[in-house]
Length: 120
Image 1 (cartoon, rainbow, N blue to C red):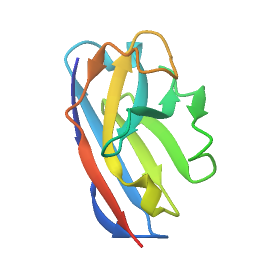
Image 2 (tube, rainbow, N blue to C red):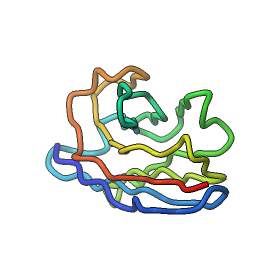
Image 3 (spheres, rainbow, N blue to C red):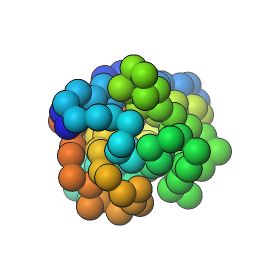
């Protein structure tokens, strides 16, 4: 599975961004998908995950109620809608694919990341 993220950028606190992750290769609908982020000097952390059907979703406490993960299996894309952004959301955001839904970083496939910068 090849994953390509897009949609990052520089925004002000309180605004919104939607990240996209386009998948190609093996059947997208068979994979659980996750979003992770890594801020400078920090370890990569879990943000959100979604099961293959879209019925199961999980969120980190830090983004719960502000971020929404969704997927379009027809379009082979997973999204991360980020609302009420805070400066502490600044990080490189990665999408990842795995046959098992996880909230850890033990995913098999990773994208290259997209930078999100939130100014105060």
